[in-house]
Length: 627
Image (cartoon, rainbow, N blue to C red; front, top):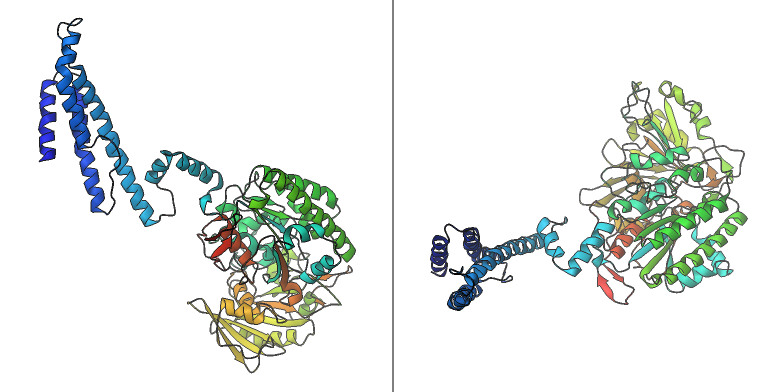
């Protein structure tokens, strides 16, 4: 009845002002008045109570009623100047009602749609949500922050994270330097308030693939980057002019790593619009602006390191300082000198300079008043060991079948039967030609019948050999024994030992979770070996056989002193991780660092990650927040 009565009033006004411009506002007021009530009723129908806005029915009655009562008074006053004055008060009331009822109706529509979108927990910001936030100062600030960073910063425990990567450094080496007082600034600004732990890296444990956990939260196999070098058998021989058949990330090939990265994973630089990469090999999402070292990356990873390392350090620190000044939420900083030096004394000198870099970084953070809001991480992607023996894998294979000697005989690849490609100096992917065709892969059981697997294991330099089974899963063989590993659809691992365990484990359950797998092996000679073997064969670019060398053996002959990396041995797989805040003790792998960073910054991963999903963190205000 209320709506019916109100409608008659507006129709009467419309008839009275039928020849006036006021008619437009009367119609607008009539429509708006109906919508104000209608939107509230529709909102309540979907469990959204909406009483906000002006010009509800009591207000409209007051405006029109008071204006009509006082109109004779204003008309008498105006008759002194106008013989037949217009009803000014009524016209004013009609204009106000015509405008404000429609504003209220639109506001209620946006409010209800925003409430429904919020209940749906949509990942993307909807137009109603954006319009609602634009109406408040806090909302506008949130939208500006999200436009700059690409995500909701209100969930962050800390405002900034800086991850320093020190390549090829193992934990015991660092601990000795700490005992000798060689790294006082790291001790003071990180260890005294935080922690140090050993984590398992990714296999192959070498520059390039071992970096993927930090940037994507995924293992190299998941990222389809199985090694520092690989061969893609899916590229047909008919494609002569192609760059996608072979890949070598040591040198200019580092620039193509982003192109090769699987489209199913995202990088930290794609989640954050302000994250900065300094001398990191993976930078998809950065662009050139947020990757200032882009044009100098090749010089850092090229085999011929004849440049001034200190000059690179100075340039890198200038970029770091600039990123801090721009309030970047995440900075990935690779300390350049540790990619160059192999001798211990050179490494110690480089680490001393890195220690000074930490001091300078802390000084800048304190000057800008953000030190307490910044998390500092130091980690290595792999460790190195000394090579006591050399075994030429290519030379050995040449005695068995025509073998490609990479990269010297690259043009002759299709005339060969075997392509061994090293990742580091103690791991290799071996690709084999079957029936004059590279497109099909060898099953492990068939390879065993050729005698190649047993011939490899007869060599002291070869520790482990793995390949795909014809009955699904992966077969791992060593002189110790044999096992079949299968990743189940429920995210668990089936582990079946034949005769004896190839890794020398005792009493391993036949069914493991990913967490169980690292817990039972992290103290062994092969940390996280079961998962690392599995993840490698997720990649279509993996070899028919994956080889891991024995302790102290290099799989290539060289005249230079060789440091070993790449293998599944603890000397290569275990890496140090240092933090200036307390870290949950259940992280075990370098992939967990990625999920830790996301949780600190309040970012929700939209791709499936291999790292742990952490639940709580102590923020810089001293409060525990659920993330």
